[in-house]
Figure 1 (cartoon, each protein chain N blue to C red):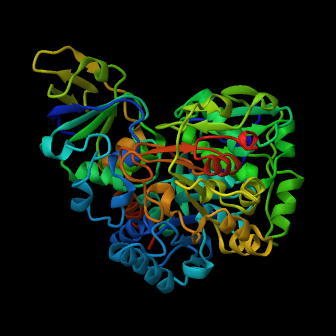
Figure 2 (cartoon, helix red, strand yellow):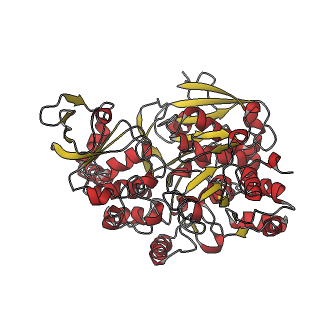
Figure 3 (tube, rainbow over the protein chains, first blue to last red):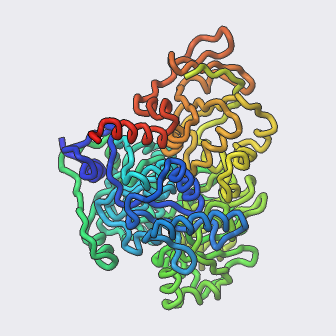
Length: 420
Length: 172
């Protein structure tokens, strides 16, 4: 019996000849990352264990992206803790201020993560890097502290589920809609403890941005990781960003999958996840009349330049409804600059948008776009749990950037085709 | 592991980490500050009602969502003795063992109890009893590696023990 992509990558990072689902292994880590919320606990654990020097200063990333620009005195203190540690340990990949972006948009863009690598991050959306054909998974701060000390992490080798995607996408359908559809089909624990491996003719046609969005939300189905095969699209993306060597692991033809699900992508319309679970999805044709107070375009899920272009196609020459607050947060400084140079920021300003800095801010109800009781937001983010973006009586509807833009214009949940 | 006895509070399926400790409070990692808001978006009055030693009982996929270790920290610092759920989301499961919050899987308990019931969790024998005379329910066995983590006081304690073992064995 052969191995899946996930099994091959994990195996190559141990001393074993092969690994099996369910087996407990210790694997070498190519990158360990944390942010301004999770790093302080990891640093404290590192020191409590007597740690004085990280295992490899080039294999740790610390990204101050959540409550930044510092939202209050306590948050400033957390960033100060992270900064002091980064300086002391001469951490190569330390980001804050003008070089900082939302971690899972920033690190692939900067060539910090490559195919075939093992990445752990004290942030659940670390699974994003599966888009590059890396094994990447979220862990807690203590796991991260252990990895900073030893360069290794323990894993239970996950069973893999294969998703075979076929068919051409309808207009205004993106990776966001495919992953929302899949989560709606299998549920928020439908891939619990498992790897979600994406394959099929549709995958070959997806941009890296779409793949990053899909792998990003694997965690919303409970998965340990999401993973894509490495192809010409991946290689071109990586070649433009890094000259480090990497290994691409195709799945063995006789690899063993727990489940194989076929998804006919040609039947999928733009999707909206209603409160309060990402699995609570409806097609845009079935959303009914849902008034919104805020539209948020950004985040590690949908804050890349392709996402801003998608939104701008809808917003060009149009204005957000008077009672809708439209927020656009480019996910990284490079995305921000590209949006400026391409004239997208002018489109957003003309539409009445507030353009924010690269930050996770509103996605997790941190700052820069909090909802009052009774308010509703359509957002290109990844979670719509109770209280996620503010008051526990507020609501979040998840959608792609074009749907968020069209909803902002009409003041209610709507797709681009609803605009005249 | 000693037997845990306590009054229970029940929660449903898919209790996410934003419900356990909302992100708006993550500008600190101080356990007592986090405990003050434990379960706030699932039940705003929870911390007024609960007493140290109480037990959380939940449905499927407890702790889904974020990787924030603040969630098990808040539960432990609030004085919750343990969490018994039908199933746990994987990062929460891992975090709980890594930082020493006892958690147990039982497919049956949640459907048989209501708020205020008293239960007894006997981890060594793998049994839960509802009330003094209730029938024993089985707990899913804890994998040996996870048991070792608990014995060693969490992941960092486990690593320290392993390192000490290596030092003793090394020739010099």
